[in-house]
Image (cartoon, rainbow, N blue to C red):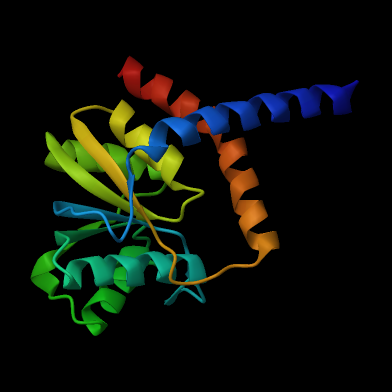
Length: 194
């Protein structure tokens, strides 16, 4: 009975994720798209050994740097956790600067502890505005939906595809996105109640 309930709930979440994916697909741009954004929001994805970006974060950073260098965006907002022992945004900024992005073009959001917080912070600091969210394809549907739901922001996404990840890793990340749906729904309800 417990297994059946779990599988039913998981199936429902997969369907909801599919709907979110279909909805957000129209807002995901690609390299051949003609676009320019004042802001690109690079969503954090953790550090390794407290000082190196994880492979998934490095993929996002290199993608954002490429977009900046080709004139697709004016500012890169590095959003992640800025804790004393693990300052994710400082590492993100350091990678961007080492790859030729001037510090004047980098904005730090050290209170981006989750995708929801990153999107809420962008709204607070820059809305009304449009923004290009930088993440992997599995993550963009949720990020775009959250950013548009919190209001006053026209959110689009650009998928980081510089690195190629294993099927196992990618499957884990898609499953993680499915499981994140209820958590983010609760956060959104709390946001509305404020």
